[in-house]
Image: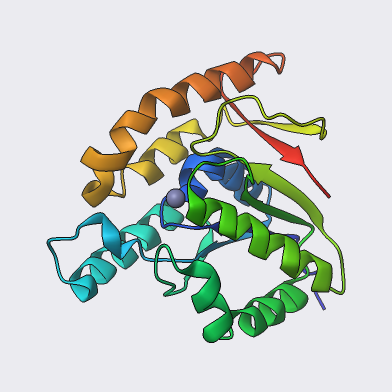
Length: 217
Ligand SMILES: [Zn+2]
């Protein structure tokens, strides 16, 4: 029997969060031969209120799959309604599905949103991840990434820097897989993403671009 691949899970409230927060790191881990699964909580159907939800879901699902493909990771999309994650998570018994997946995959690392992120959906994903963590049979390392929160966290948790110089290209390619988001989310974020990548790269000798995380468990 061949040895099981090391698995890493990335929790993502909306379809583009895993790319913005950890895209370069995902691509790096995939290149190292690891299996990365991104779990997307919502299609983000509220992003285009003038279109029918089903239409938005269809093209957001396409985009998300293309974005994951650019990074080389797998993606699982759940259909929780934005702004109602926690209620829906409990109603739809998503926890059972999540626990089954996590206990089967036995990830060595889980990445999730920061509890300091101003977006309420992002904070709910953080809360849900911590609740799941408590119930896991095998405890992985648990890291947080940032989307909208300020660059420095008010925390003393140890920091993980990942050199993404060799994967920055894939991260940008993956972001470009979201044409429907380009004008309302990605463009204002591009500058921030570039700034963070250079700043985190600067912290590591010889790295042009980096991504950083805090280890909370
Ligand atoms: Zn988001």
